[in-house]
Image (cartoon, rainbow, N blue to C red; front, side, top):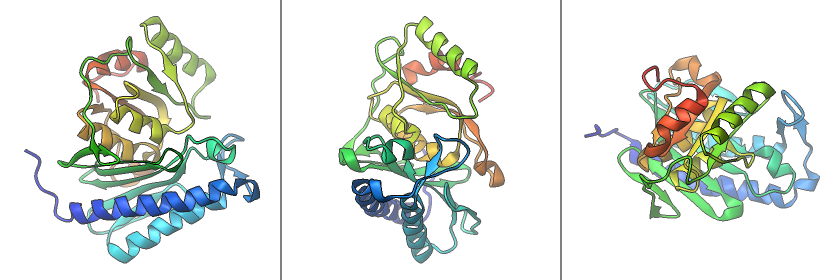
Length: 270
């Protein structure tokens, strides 16, 4: 039985309310996206706007007011260390490229890490009017409906999500796709890793793999998948390690071994 975490429910309630408010702010920017000044970061596909920064600031301000001793890591404003043992991990708009191009595949992702594990995950997809929410020992829900993964779904009778970025060499990604297809699988990519991991929790995808990913892209979804009965590849969450790239794999139980082979990862090493 999982030990009770003091303060978890209060933070879970805040995460859900913030995700809803932040999602509405992001959606307001989405409706006037033609007026936004778009900047690039590492490459032409890695973009940011004032919407990303202001949504993250909104969330940070509310955390600071409610839990000033908590740490916060966000994609746009970096890491602020805390002393409570809780660290919030934020992606104000995951899927900024779809966002600025008028596509609905983006979301607000909020996670809380405690004892090096994600214990809260809330993902709001405003264009789809969907809020995914999970906390350790509380289960996972989509718009309040409980989520539980189907043990009969495999890579051969369901779809796998794949992600890539400028850290992944084209040949490496091609080999991953080839291994998946050779083993009877199929795949999709919608431009938001956080949203696709939420889809794993909802049973829409049987798994998601990306060779290099940041904590703010995956940890909200990781909590959702775990609480829905799935498996996740451990993500380094101690101190500065939380700010570094790492491979990410989330899957329904019946797809784990196949996807580890596709990713060429070892379950024992994980």
